[in-house]
Image 1 (cartoon, rainbow, N blue to C red):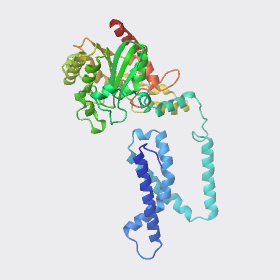
Image 2 (image 1 turned 60 degrees about the vertical axis):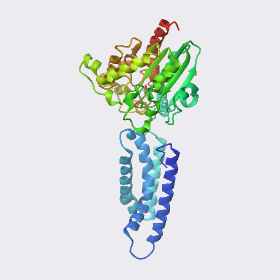
Image 3 (image 1 turned 30 degrees about the vertical axis):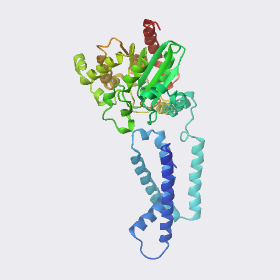
Image 4 (image 1 turned 30 degrees about the horizontal axis):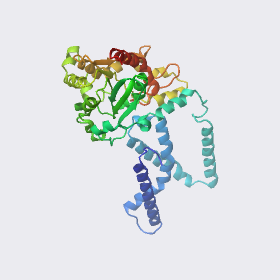
Amino acid sequence: MPKLCDNDFYQSFVRLISTSLGGFAIFLGAQSSSYGSFSMTTKIGIYLGDISYSVYLVHWPLIILAKYLMIFETTPLWHILILIFGISIAQYHLFEKPLLHQSSKMTFAVCGIIYGLLILTLCQPQSFGYVRVTHPAVAANQQIAAQCNQLEMNKDCNWDEEMLEIAPKPKKSAAYFCSYNGTGKATVFFTGNSFALRQLAGVKKALEGKYKTLYFAARPACLTFETFNQGYEKYWQCDEIFNKTVKFLEKFKPDLMIISQKLSGNDAFKKPLNSTEAYLQDDATIEVSRYFQMFSLFTKKIFFIEPHPTCSFNPALTLAKEIAQEKDITNHNLDLKNIRNQVDPGWLKIKAGMKDCPKCVALDVRDDYVENGKYAVSDRISKLSLFCDNNHLSPPGVERMLPTLKKAFNQALKELNL
């Protein structure tokens, strides 16, 4: 059974459908041996039964090939299902059915050839005659991709009771209200969306030995500026945290507030503007400024980490494949013009919203990733991907920004005598 989803309901549903269809096919098969004319439904059932083994043979290799070529990231599943059935029908009519009318010797010969080709393929896993490359970055990048959704909060989130008094424990997966104890003096509040979920370890490392308590509130998609979440699909459950950020700040009065979130997915932060004045007067900027003013009442410093770009491909898996094929992976580094088009509309509105916020600091981290006029998606020496999927930084990617974060945080804590 193809494991396209880890959901238990999905697996049970597929087994139920498979069993039901199997029983239905057996029932129709029994009818097919009786005399008399068949109904259209019976004929369709007989035909589906005839091609079912062909579908069984074809579907799994195609799914594996689609995963290898990363087709699932750009092609809807139903397109692939149509392809599976199309190839299965062609295989049945052009190969399987004609083979049934051949002699036993011919059938055994054909099966022997196919079996031999399969054995040869197993001996050469990366296609016929291709020399296997065992660069350690191949397995390492595959591991980066596999662990992208294995968030550290799954294991070590200390669900903070005081936070849960303000907001109930989320029903949404990958949503957290955690607190972490440290050996320093500062109280820190770190929040954001899925960007923050992948950057928590880096922020903790940048503040190592500096914080007494670090409060963490994050969930996918939802913005800290909560009015911009209106209109989001109910799936994200952003309504659960409406007006909760200010209440967290009022409760804990942190020395530092740190925000990291993707902006480019929200319509209010997509459109580029023509001038600095236009950014200052933009409605989204004005709303962001209003939030910064509210946040400033309850914290001493507000840091906003520059959003990183997202990719049209999965760097970790793409690099693993191309390193194995000894290709030049620097060709995948991102064009800075495209980065500016994607990131700057939202980032410049955030900066403009800080104009009247003396406590606010914009952390520009883009230069930490620029190499030879391109935005790097991999480390030049280790060849490890800086992204774990097309949307999020990997642990090596987060490491890139740590010097910038440490410098800014240490300077702020020094000014606050912490």
